[in-house]
Length: 93
Length: 260
Image (cartoon, rainbow over all chains, first blue to last red; front, top):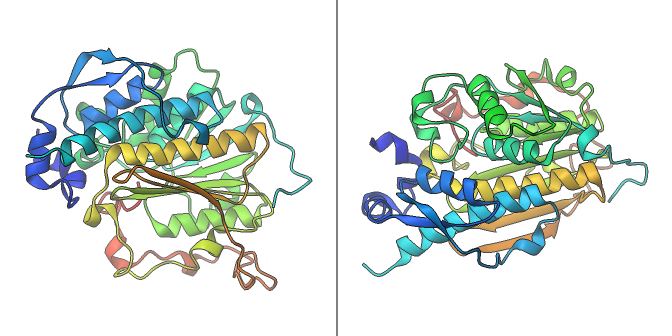
């Protein structure tokens, strides 16, 4: 893994070099369901190790904003990844 | 807002032009393939850079250096083997001199390009061709998507009057962007796009998502009376090349990944 790979997110004030190391520190599991492939792709992209299994599907807070299953799947997966990343960055050190 | 004459073409019959296969374009093309949009024409002329990988989820580390269009279309066909979508590559940028030709036969344009010049050009061209358009952008933890109807009012220029100065516009190469936030932007674009194709169309809607705060807001775009594109006396009536010059600091292909 090179610096280039995560450069665009490491520039974020909330991430930085320390945040990038924390993101990579421990593996996560994705939420099961139609959004899972998207969540997996984004978490791997962000440098989080993703385990093979999945977590039980939780309710998605923004589901009512989406009318179409294909858009909802993408939204649910991307949102799962955002939530896991933000939680890890916000967690007390 | 919703033109009474607008007839949704239907998802499986529609031809959609996707401008840009980057951070917004990759997941957008994936979800539109998943939904079975009849024909997806994809316009892209860039190559895959290592710094694209965290958000441009059709590409893998071994694809770095190859062209986005052929790798992306291969990946779409591999990921959605049962999709009814036909994927048609267009190995070109969307430019003033080919814009109207690229819009021929298209029912809807979905734009997730990486630069303001293309965003304004797509907005202007769709208004002149009376085509609906869904556009998106993302930077840092924020993403935005908007849906403009075929009558083109309210329009993109009601929101952002003209190309910004190089100093004023943040771009992701400088400001950074969180990958899955771009995915949320694409999901909002896809939902708008599928609603345009299936009806009822959400013309004039603007969606904004902040991933750090986890806030999603969908509002109506306010039309500006003196808008240069869709106002009472519009000054933009053709696609003159000089109107779409990117600020100097943003030129270059992969050096500038502003909104993707």
